[in-house]
Figure 1 (cartoon, helix red, strand yellow):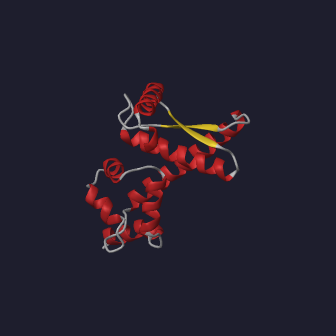
Figure 2: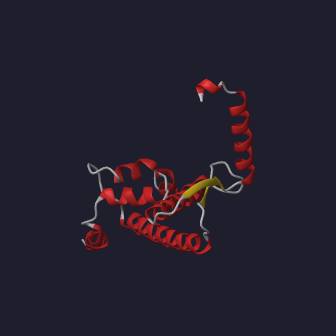
Figure 3: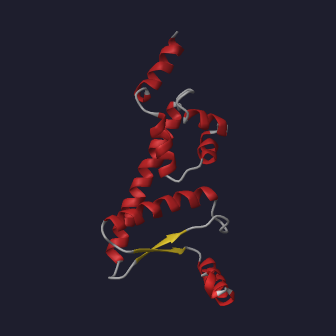
Length: 160
């Protein structure tokens, strides 16, 4: 009986929270289902069920995790936005975009970094600032320039 009461008390602070909130926060933070499952040591299907209103809700540990990640995301966005505004000139503000497969950077880190970049760009545009995106990896940026140049050189002008 005491175990049942302890379980109820642990869930009580989360009883009125929506699974839609859980999923929205996960996606806003740039976390995949796999990222959450890996971090919490559960199956991906468990996280999918947490986000489905027809199944059981997220565990208290999952709520604590997603709330911590969301707080970190909001802090990172605020810091990056302030830095962008402090260092911006009159022209467009460059926002760096990361790509999967970068050496030494996990796909989870890429997702989280790009979620921050997206939120910063949206905030800057809301403030009326022009934003341009660039790859964070200089080699990728150079490869894109070369590929784009080659494409336009070879393309039929009527197709462009």
